Structures are given as C-alpha cells and as structure tokens.
Length: 597
Image 1: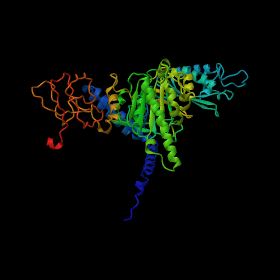
Image 2: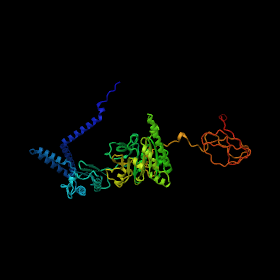
Image 3: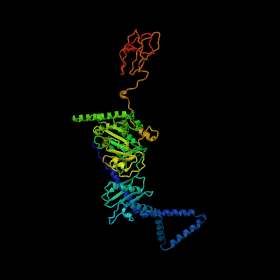
Image 4: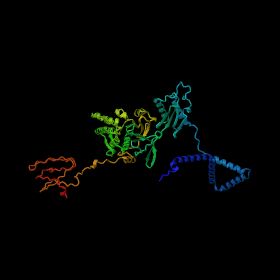
C-alpha cells in the first residue's frame, strides 16, 4: 500500500503558524492604530460615568432632589437651544477624549541631572587617554561636549550605567593590549564596581561597546546532561557566547542553558585539561563533575593529593579503578596508567598494520584525574622517590590515540611547580575563583573580555579550550555527598549519579568463620576416654600460628601441607591440638559420597 504524503499543514506547519502569528500581530497593530480615537473616547466615557456615580454616592439624600432638578433644567435648556444637542454631543466627546488620554508619564528625552553628571565625570576621566595636543578638532577635551563621545547610553534602576557606546579618535592604539586594559579598567571603576562588564572593540568604526553582564546561575546541580560520547560539560556560560543549549532540570521546571562543552577522543585538539584556582574555588567540584560524566562511558583513576577524602564517594564504584591518597598508591596507579597507555598504543598499531579495527579494550576511554599533584612532589623529594608528575609524560604525549585523558587540578599559586609536560600538553584551561588579569592571562594564554571581580561564588571562573575564546564559566554544583555541610538536594543529586558498587571478581565471597557450608563440625579437642576417629576439614583460610605438638615415639610425624587454594587436600593429615593427646589419634581420609549417603 502506497504511503500518502502528509498534509501541507503538518509538513511545514511550524512555518505557516509563525507566518500566521506574524500576520495576526500586524493586523492587531494596524487595528489598534486605526481605532485608537474610538478606544480613547470609550475609555473617557467610562471614566466620566465612574466619576458621575461617585458624585451621586457622595451627595447627601436631602440634596439629591435639587441635583436632579438642576440636571433636568440643563438638559431642557440645551434641547431648546438652536444646535444645542449637536453642541452637547461635541462637548461630551471632547471631555471623554480628554479623560481617556494616556496619563502615563512621558519618558524624558535625555538623562536627568544625576545621570548627566555621571556621564560628564566619565567623559572627563577619558580625556587624558583619548586626546593629544596636536589634534585640531579634539573629540575629548576638558569641558567638551560629552554627547558626541557617548552616542548611546542606558541606566539601570539604581542609576548606574548598564550600556554605553564610546567613540574614540582614530589615533588611539586600540590594537595594543595594554592600552585596552587601561580603558577597560577605568570604565569598570567609573561605571560601578562589583559587576562584570563585557567590552567589544570595533577597530574599524572606532567604537567601544560596554555592557553589564548578568550573573550566571548558581543553582544548577549535577545531573545527566544530554551529550554524546566524548563530550564533557565543564559548566555554563553566557547565551551570547555559544550557539548550543542544554535542557536542564530545576526541580519541576526545565529551561535551556548554554554550556561550555569540552570534546575528547581521537579527533580532539585539546585532549587534556588543566584546572587552577584558589582554595575553596571549586576545582575539586569540577573534578567530581567530570568523573561522574566520564563513568558513563569509561574508566577512571583518581589521585587525590589533598588527602581530605573529597573522592571517597567514588571508592569501589563500577568503573573506578583506583582512588589513591598516598604517595605509594599514586606512584603505583600512575605507573600502571603509563603501562596501559603503551599497551593500547602497541595493540592499536598492530591492528592498523594488519588492516583490522583496533581491539575493543583500547576503545574504552580511560580518565586519569589528579587533584593537587604538587603535594606529592614535595613528599617524593623528601623521601628521595620518583615524582608522580614524571609518570604523566607518556599519557600526556600519547594519550589521545590511546583514548587516555588526563585532567590535572591544582592551586593557582602552584602553576610554576607543575612539570613541563603538564603545562605543555594541557591545552584546555580552566581558572576558578578570584584572580587578577595578569594571572588569568598567564594561565589561559589570553586575557578575558570581561572584568574579573573580587567576590565570586564557588565554581565561578573562566575557561578557554585551545586557541578559542575565553568564556565565563559556572561549574554545576557537585559537592561531596559525605560532607555534613552539603545540602540534602545536592547530596541526593550526586548520589543518584554514582555507579553501583563493584562486586568481587568471579563472584567470590568471604568465607564464613564457622567453616564452609555442608562440612561436618570439628570434634572438640578435649580428652575422652575412648577417642574416635574424626574427619579433618581443611579450609582455604590460612591457619593461625599454633604451637608445635610434642614428639610422640609411637607415631611417625607426617608433614602437614596447607594449600592456599580453595581445593581440599586429598592426603591425610594429623590432627594438631594445642595440648598433647595421651594416645595417638589415627587419621582417616575424607568420607566418600557413598558413605555420606
């Protein structure tokens, strides 16, 4: 049966609905313009009627008769006059139009006195930077016209500048970073501190646009983001910086927020990440957020140099290979990671030479997360041991073709203490917490287009992926769920993302202390008048050290063989007791299945 095509209204219904909505809006605007006089007169008649009712209600009852007689006399005189009804209707319509006019206060054409004074102060402050003595017609001069330099401006409810367009002369060195930084610092100081400003330089038009940025949302909690394998959400930024949005959940509400997505894998140009920040700025929160996203498709090795238990919630989880807090464990884990990277490279190379796809064990991503590795550097130097950062050279240099990703987080003051391979191969950078413009440029490789502030919430900072733009960043709240200060909503959100606990390999279980099930109970070692032979149960547990029995002349000693494997020994062994028995105890082999039955 042939499939019938969908109706046109369903195939391109969205476009038709949008066109119909635009036509309806245009028709409504046109009708409003045409019927505006009628609407005004109707509103005025309603107001006149309301005023008449109020006047009638306020008139005392003993005076209402005289008022009615006066109104009737006026109506009679108007009716008897030549052209009286026509003049009465014209007068009523005029009064209604006057009463129905829009009484909203008209917005002033220009700034008020306070705003004008603020713009003049800003203009005078820019004169030393945008003027020279050789300029015949200076745009900036002391006592000059500020309205020519500021063609567009806007103020917020508090009277501070929220948007400003600044014109500057063509000879200003707008291509130099130092000159730009001076102007940006001056404008941020004069426009109001405590806010983040975005600066857009138009070198061709000799204009600078200053706009106030809204604070980034801080109520975004950890959740499953709609991303593809190999994509990691570092945080969220301004809607004007990225073209992509992610649907997020806020309790029962949902809204779209623009993310900062970091792509890893074989085709990534920034395969490794370096996060820097002050204590308490949120670098550990960023690593926990990355670990929870990485566990959806790969394995994770965590090395915690802080030793504060920030990653204890990930211990023993499915996909978490190790969570190390000591120097010995860190060296062991990183040595294994380097060896695993080499093994993956060799296996993938052999598969490529044979014309076959890479093995499956080389495709699963491996994440190496290090928090404060410089703390181990001092411990290793004190103990004369190897620096753990030296073991990162192989994963950093050859991790991309082997699906190995390295994420390093440390304090901003310890940037110089990081090894050269770490600083060279971590092209994706994140800086969290308060920082100066010089520190941001040194860590990110480029200055941000916004002014950093002194007080920022945890998880707020800047991110730059490779040679791209510098984005404002807000890391989603991913606190330690075992911390008592963690809110219940955030704790439940993190616990819901944790993988299940890893079960022992091959279904192994810990043996019960009473012995293996199904075996006869051991005979007590107390002396009996007539001892009977008993079977000996040999378990896989290592026996506790016991005193050697006294030599007996009647029985030859038989060597005891204790196996560490769960299989039972087929050879007979003598029963060892803590006290020597008066008579030799014969040893019998295990009963067969037939005898048991």
